[in-house]
Length: 240
Picture 1 (cartoon, rainbow, N blue to C red):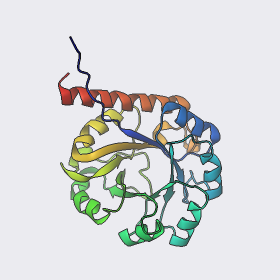
Picture 2 (picture 1 turned 30 degrees about the vertical axis):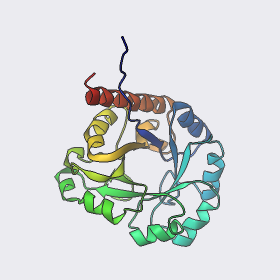
Picture 3 (picture 1 turned 45 degrees about the vertical axis):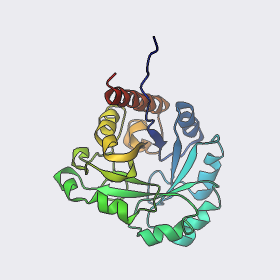
């Protein structure tokens, strides 16, 4: 008698805000699909394009470096690409669709566009369907919590208030950690074409002075929990 196994819809994982060689190595060893470098000078996780390139040289094939920009000029964005072949851009400020298109050299490079979702009940007023349409050239829309400054500040928005059907690939971010990522995946995955997850503070060492300092145990735990969520989704889909 043959046994049918459920097909896993694999959730891609990005570990963001890396600043040290050992953290890059830990993320790769855990099975991350992408590594994020923050090129926003006001961030405590900032690295220069040269430093990002130095860290990215440790990446094996098929692990993607992602460069996070916040309202950076087109000239500086294109200049940063010169240091990292094959990098994906992530625009996290007020960049318009036209600015994203120009900064990626008319679509020659893929990019992610961050959507900053208001906290609490106000999240229901964010028109994600229109936002995804406006940025239809983006490879995916990254969902983050809207807090002061840029980045989710370790906070989650109300996932249940997202539209039921968004015609886009989504990346769930904002306050994720090993304790809540399964709930986030189960809540958001049915609403979009595909879902990835993005974690930063949720895999860092505890303490206010450790922004950008990752904990390899937390990274491995986070990846393991995401894989468990994939298995759970497969079992739900195939009624195993």
